[in-house]
Length: 277
Length: 265
Image (cartoon, rainbow over all chains, first blue to last red; front, side):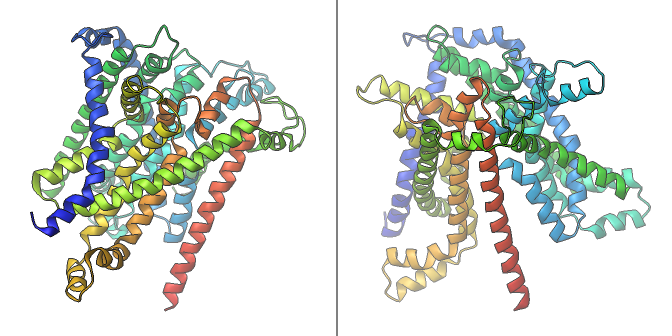
């Protein structure tokens, strides 16, 4: 080995050691725990225990997908109008989008408790108008609201980034050639913004499907998501702690996310190939 | 159409800021009620500064963020130089491992490290979850982000200058510090700031890996949400919000000031 490549190896050594011990080995341990029982014997029991949580997985997926869809629908028009503003106004607006992101999401979720409570601001307002209060907190709807609120900026930013790169003249050219609003969106804006949509969807879906805080604070223990179950197996009461089942649930969650990301990246390739033609 | 899009933007921003506004208003509430406003008072701010648990966790949060950002920046920057020189399978393998903590949900990263710590803690007497494990877990999720911000800067680097410095008699280490580092300094600073803020903001990974002795501010806030309501959280959140707002304003003003200066030249 010559001196140059030796230095190149040396500079990577701390990183290599660190990543093996604290990233690769822990993932291997998750797999190991998922496939063994409390005494360390091989078993597939934990994997089959997942069947019991099929419903929880379904609810987590459902709420995360609904939140992602709402985020996309809310974010796209906003990102578009911001991308058509003057440059200086654009940076102000983007700062306004980012500002809530810099607050810890626990605080942001907690703020909604005040608003949604049975005696909270909305219900007090409704009663003031003579209406009857209704239950909002501790429902699936409240959990979805919390997810949308927390992750909306993560959808706005990547979509804005791709839309701002589309020149106004491209849109005008399409309009000159007789395209109406719908056609401009379908043929120009949407295909060109697919990469932004995909990163936005990933950035909303992954934390939403794996959360346990939002469901605890706004679901009030009534909405159990897969994150709640995992948390309970690792940090619950002594009786409920079971690293093996917890590890197997985490493994499934990890695979689920990898598969969804692979599917989405597949979409991206199809779209850009279509755009080439 | 213009009016419609204005109203729409106004509503979305209203949605984003309404809860924050409510929180700020209620942090000045004289009574303990979460919804009834009983007059203006700074009572909760005063109590906040006498709460030892909160002050200690703020200190731990800042210490972990600073230390983990420094270590992650050192390891990550050096590694970027090595990874930049790699080709083929080896490079792909490194980048794949680098992406594991970035793409995995926080809870998976958190429990995987917790299993590791518990696995070894139970086998090594005298070691337990605390500041050490907290710091290790933060360094681990910070390193990939430093690599991701330094690596693109190396791509634009002219390696001839590094070799020219050595040809002129500069020792390699000095040449690296004087020639390579200044050229990638922007990426290093971005990586450091990102690591610092990610660490400060993290809840999930700290929650699983801090133990009872080294709770960060978000972990303390979480345990406060489980106890009976206290407006102290609102006061704390208001202060954090102001800190972030001032920081962003300063950064933005400086940036636009620089832009103006550049435009003048």
